[in-house]
Image (cartoon, rainbow, N blue to C red; front, side, top):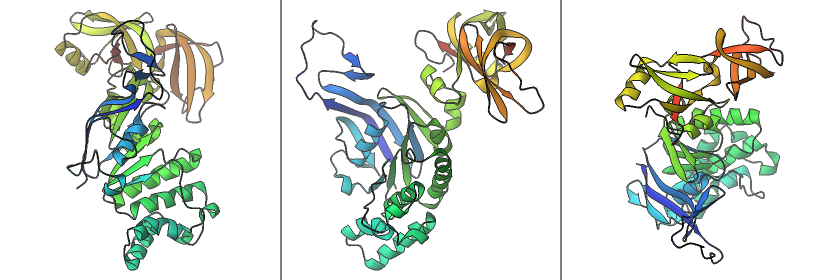
Length: 390
């Protein structure tokens, strides 16, 4: 069993130099480069709570510097844990050496031994453990077959492409039959086409090996396609945990709404009002009544009328005869659709217009009208930036 539990995990990097005295006693911790700086040091990860089921594929996603790789390295034992508890298979791992955690890690750089063949690279860790030669050969060839690299076993890394080297790095990890497989942005060095192919390979791989995956990426497309659940991080804190569909359909706050989805969610300054006991949003001179499920959630929380930030995804906005008035700034032909950048209601709004069966000729400066349904909008507090429904 390889259940992984992280309880109040925290990572603080101590100051390398004596910290200057503060001007005022008891002043708030300063903020620099989005990370909190305290008397202890720079806080990279804090209040991280997550329970990962056996054989689950969890993806940690967020912008650079959000603490996702630091969290992964604490699980691996490559970073000391400043606070909290880490359990792997119900065993406390805070002070257990990396080699004794029964985990394997695949890095962003392939880290292959250039003087060894693919076979020897994959067999190396097993040889160090003095595993029987026949067993080593069985495991290496089985992993090579799963990853479709059997034909490269006698080659050296320099004779392989980037994608093939990454498969070797993954193969070297899975021959150890680890309880937990850790992956730190393993596809970021590959070109776009190869990255798509390797994503598909990883999805097939997790069906063929019985292990728990914890995967780190800054690419939300990887997170959405690979993860059973995704953990969205920002400035060392978890913003939301859920299935890809849950975080896409019900973002917890403005950051999640803007980070998940491509192109990013449009945001309007709007007003949440109640008319005849029904919630509606007013924006750009139009009023849109919210769907029944949204009405019920807002009513249950007794949300008052207020100024809000309204979120609408580009694919949920449609052109119409009478709606929010806008002017086309840029028209991007994407094949099956046109991405329009429109100035509307004081914002740069992106609208995705399908090209099938319609005109795709939107000249710069042409006027358009935009509308959206009350079932696809998201209403966020201007003060807290949290989704008012949840």
